[in-house]
Image (cartoon, rainbow, N blue to C red; front, side):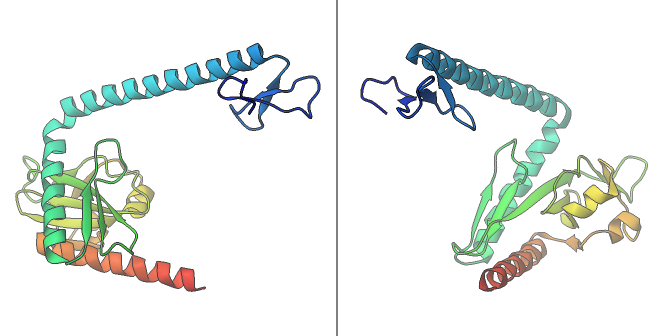
Length: 219
């Protein structure tokens, strides 16, 4: 870029008719004058800013709606996430764990060491069995978590069922009702896991993931 060119504009001297270019897409766009190039660049930046503001506004609306509908559930899920992360790090020396913010696909990331990839985990919680159905627990919005474990935690009992996110997607239903020894219970990868058992089970998944990645890299 020439020292006299505005920031973001460059002069391609090999082009005769439209030598002034800006990188606002693929392929690059070229214009006959510097003013045209600057105007296009400013319009592009304004569009990006507007989209960012629109996305933020949409996320704020979603968070407000979720808080109104699932406020207590979201708070409970975060409490369980914090407890899981604390137990993971206390149980596995050298490990790491993160509780993610709203808007991310996973609620928790776990890994055994700095060399290993993160294991994503989605958490769903319920405070207790549904009224009138004392042996059935309901979990909401369990789809959309391909490639990760979905932990369904019963706060009243203090244990979890763990599902494959892909299997829940294939099931095709947004919500999940679980009754011990019934169909949806049998769909779980693991059942009746207290916090210590859940950490142990997830650590085995993390180990399997690390081994699979090592084998793939060796090929």
